[in-house]
Image (tube, rainbow, N blue to C red; front, side, top):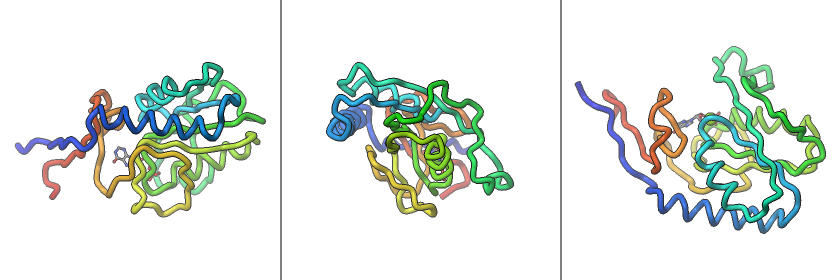
Length: 179
Ligand code: IMP
Ligand code: MG
């Protein structure tokens, strides 16, 4: 049987360098203002942990959401289905959403829409990977580590069927039977 093939795209050192640079960009915007940084589980866990520790503001607050994967049937409801919602309030806070990858943009469009309804003082999006050429929804990415072409990426939080999240680098995965 053919095996899945991993090809290294971004080694840990390259990721660390970009995370630091993005942290400096975020600091340039928020300075020492209070900031609520929200991790979109599970994929963003590694990026979120490194990014938060790279921000030189000990007063940032952290929270977590998880969006359940849904079939096409419920996607039109306009509301993300949270399998875990935040514990802190987003109202009147500067909120920074941290995501693993923005692909078509559907997920972030729903999530950002829901956060806007909570009346934050401001709302911004940071993503590890931006698959810009695949975008079908107009989602504004404020901070990104890497723009990537179409393909399937795993590692540093990103999974395929819950596997590969723990890899310290980012890889493309080609599955048996695929070109
Ligand atoms: P979107 O709604 O099409 O933007 O999809 C975003 C979600 O799909 C991300 O939050 C990921 O969970 C998943 N996803 C999209 N592309 C990849 C990939 O290359 N590797 C792993 N997960 C992906
Ligand atoms: Mg995700």
